[in-house]
Image (tube, rainbow, N blue to C red; front, side):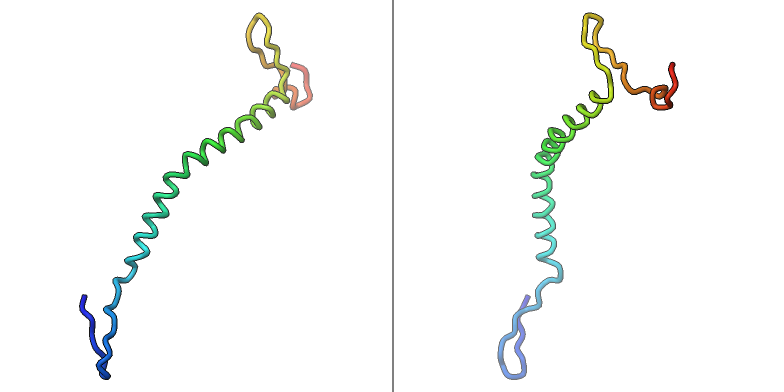
Length: 84
């Protein structure tokens, strides 16, 4: 781009490309989210999984004996208040 002059002979800067810097900033922001997203996923999984697991285990009667893993806690019959 060329520079122009005003009536007084003072050089004025060439007009910049509209939105040129915004494209670069958006690319950098996208790159930043790309690098941080896996970390957020890992931190979220490490935080959320134990909480959900403990809630599920607290609502069930777990017996881990010779027959394997058996859940006999909250069922739809227990929630209705009737015996199965």
